[in-house]
Image (cartoon, rainbow, N blue to C red; front, top):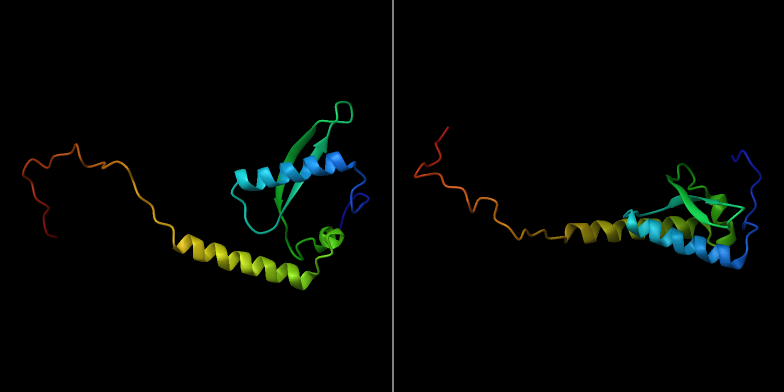
Amino acid sequence: MNAGVLNLPANITKEVKETIQEFSLKTFKVLGCSGVIRIDFIIDNDTNEIYVNEVNTIPGSLSFHLWKATNLNYTDLLNKLIDLGLKRNREEKNITYSFDINILSGYSLKGLKGSKI
């Protein structure tokens, strides 16, 4: 499943972990993501700078092996995702869009009326 060696949790310092978690939340929010995604990071060994590399959707089993360190079982994860999806659907149905400009306000039909077809 993984071409490299998988270390869960990753062998990183507490500070690096906290920075990556912070970057993950910001990335998720900025991109307007929902559900489960996987964010890959790159750490520059010379400067210790952390970069967001890419955001991935997670196919199949939601790469459940990545969740083991959280002590969240698969059933609970699926139930959480279903609840989040239903909540998002309810919220989207209640969105009302309004526009602050009337695009037709400067247009004149000069007395013309619509025709019937």
